[in-house]
Length: 298
Picture 1 (cartoon, one colour):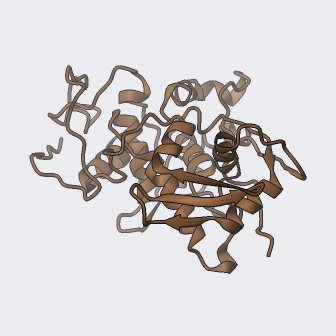
Picture 2 (cartoon, rainbow, N blue to C red; picture 1 turned 45 degrees about the horizontal axis):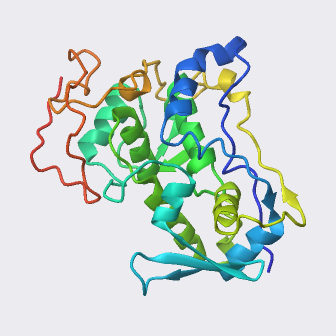
């Protein structure tokens, strides 16, 4: 059974938009994305051959009998194996195997509500980009349509991807490679009616790395670029309630040398200096262990 292809996700971001009109309001966030850990993942544009993509997804299996675990598949009659480290190298995330894929609630709340201006209700299973404005909404949009493993719904992101925005903003580690590996594994194990050609760009890059002399054949899948009309659309909140307000970018998004200080001065825009002299602060872990941290509300 042929898998469906959607061009609405795993898109290409605008790395060099035409700097005029509404796009001028997004220069800071685009500059950040161009130097961020996801810069290659959101801009790499391989020739995507549908036959190879279908072969990968029809044969892919998760092999947990080896350490580290790998995803095995057969493409062009040849076996390939993909590990978390393979994804780390090929997609050039620059993350570490020890980096987390989640953060404690106070990190999430501090970044999303205090700094990004998020006004969505608490207690939901996902974050909605409609409750952000301008550059923050574009940042969330890029994460959803370029990095997420979704097949539909461009407004929602799960806590794992929302945590990735926190890690990028604070210059703290986030394990993008594990996020992608897990998403591929989840798609392998999903019910047949939910299967589709997930991550056409990423999977093609992984195939090209494993089989470097592979010649493109068959239908070439067209990869979309993020619609430039969003630059104008995201400047206004629309009719949502409560209405999000503009908040400035901060931290690593503006300063390449920034590391979130341990004294929580990043938590509020009015809490004083945000720069830290320490670049080797302890990262959180996947379980959200907050031992040794004390939150300060301002």
